[in-house]
Image (tube, rainbow, N blue to C red; front, top):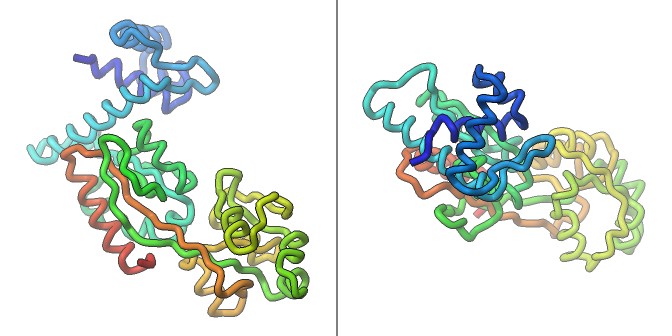
Length: 296
């Protein structure tokens, strides 16, 4: 059996990024934190942390963190079922989600559920192609991801498709997209992309225009709201989720550059296979909202 005080220390060291902050968080000395980690590593027989700045977990450390997070979730459910809820120990549900979902349908889908159960929501935002890594490492109990195949020990449920449309302001289109050859226009028109992790724009240009040499110019703006604002301000053109694009297209503020060229991105809800009601309740709430707002 593991000493859960030691596992908690491991979790806090990783979440706080170091031993000093973990000691402050736990109200104990730094040496006491170090001793708990050392005892845990002695028991496992492997290093659990990479002493970098910030401190990060090793692969073995991540497995222990995932186990600890699962136990916390189950204990929280047990307290609730036994009607011995402790206000000082609220249920914290960690979920990984992509920025576009967070900016559109995700929070409205879960707000009433979290208010009713008095759970606390902790979100980790990453590209939808990477959120499942946070589930695997134990940093989240569930994630919205583009990965269909369930991770080991997890389940995968289809939510729906987010459709992306290539849009820009009328003035931007008049300046950059007036020739008869789209590939020439694309080479000169600055694009707006979400981040270096986001490969949607690359896939769009490769699929529809056979452009694979990264010859275009681009702005990188890693914020869903600021990304859209940059396009609205005429800084560039880009692929915008249909839920964000529709009102702006309806008003004429933005125009679809290639109306018949759109990208469909399927989204899935992956969660741990543990008997915790939280993940089932959350999936039902997400599925209900997704059915209304996402495309099939």
